[in-house]
Length: 107
Image (cartoon, rainbow, N blue to C red; front, side, top):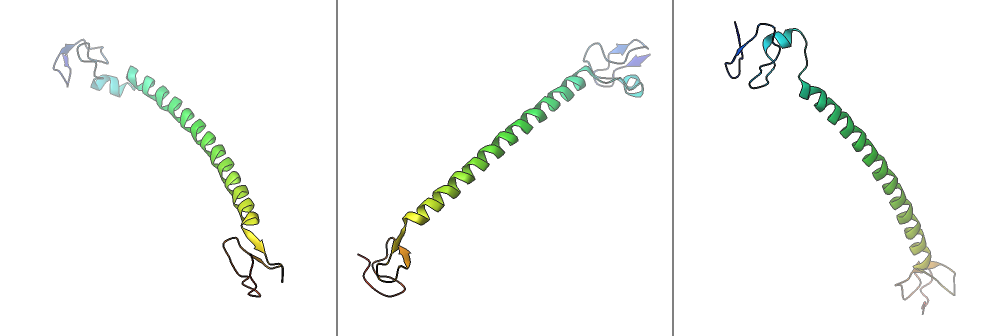
């Protein structure tokens, strides 16, 4: 006689799974019979992996666009935020009142 190791149910000698609780019994393990839910789990994990790969790909493209935009904005702001001294033509920050090269009034 064969009994389920989980629930103790008496099982037919040719059983791989318990017909009461569904656990795979020793004979099923030895025969290499996989549990039905295992295939579903494998499929789910595979699909999840594909979705994660898509998400990372999209995130990577979005980050690339964001960095490009940030770089362009920084370059624009650098151009706009400089005052050119009329005396020596040195570039100064926009908040400067006097040229850091020659000391002349920038306003």
